[in-house]
Length: 450
Image (cartoon, rainbow, N blue to C red; front, top):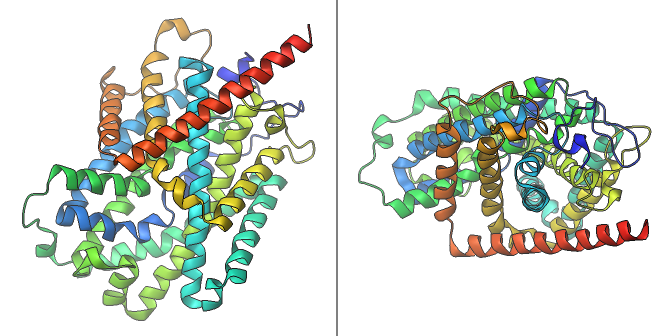
């Protein structure tokens, strides 16, 4: 195994072509990337769906998930401070548990990115269709999906610095409308409407938590492009905690304002726009509409960047064909992985098959959490001192944080529906098949060189 595959001690990850990726991402670039991954389309829709399950208990569920984000994020921050290469959770679990477990984690993480990007770009078309009905036509829908995905692929191939500039701008563009919604809306919140009238059942709270998990997750891929970050062992932990704090504040305040200003929140199809219309008028609803378009565009940019880097890491370390691990000789980006990821997104988005994959995404995220939380404990063992670097950040209270994060992740997984569990299992089986096919090809290649 190449040392870079585990510890990333080189100046930058070296692809199959021999070129290295450029280290051009700073701490705020990674933070913006994390916020873009967390805040996508879900925050504009999920508050109503979660309220349908947990009612007025939903803001407390938000705070619980924020706490979960902190303890799981602490695990990501600790292991992330040990590595400098590209791959994030894939690298961590590879060092701790070997190739097979790492491949499954990396595969599930990429699988989530591809399905999510296809889903969000379709959501973008629906949002635009509210103002331009022509977008609902087949030609209009296809033009937006192909145009946006192709543009993002072009930017990603040209350079990570250009991608970061775009993501930074879109982050500001999406936070401004949401911050306005929260700050103005707090003055119109009705206190009694936030007081739970009756106890909520465990199953209802669990369903609400799984729904809200969509708008509380995404920060787990902040470390994926660490091979293109400056001082990744310091910037990755900072970006993870900054993202978790921002996402908890925004998501919780959004839920409080929506719950406190919009009667019948649970039945609303566009909860934030409907709430904004009540306390800011038509201009407020338009602001939220524009914010949703910017938010989904930024999320797509982040999905493609991080998803392509996961493929690159798998190819760079020999768990996928070396084609995926090649670095563009001029732009020094993982161009093959970018174009492949964009192609898969287009196929899923245009065919609508991403809908069938959505059920597996919850399980895929939680498997990533479990892999990293357990790797945090394992990599503390002195026996791994020769394969990973010393942590620049260590989660407090000894084993308590990673153990608690593992238990919470298992609890959320146990609350998944039968459909989600079956879909997740099928995705894992599909990953296992790919792994052993690739292993067979590796074995034949080695025999051919003897």
